[in-house]
Image (cartoon, rainbow, N blue to C red; front, side, top):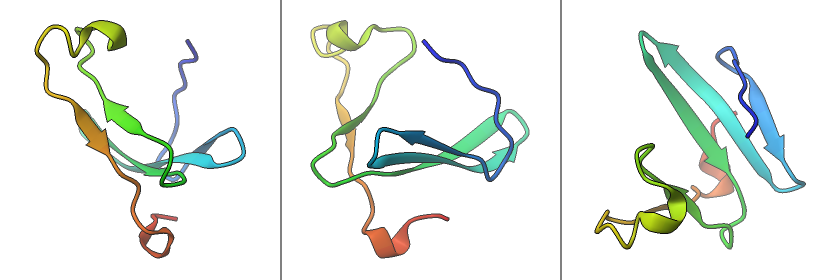
Length: 74
């Protein structure tokens, strides 16, 4: 696992096609934006449940679809 401390406006590149933007840091909350091809599935998981056990535990699946490229946060 890679753990980073990033300032607002920082970008993390994952492979050639996926970028994660730190859009806003306010109080104890961080807002992130994802820019990825539409075929890349992005799931939000509870930190209390491992990824492979989330569905079997009855947790709702949240699949986030990337915005159109023209609306991406830069």
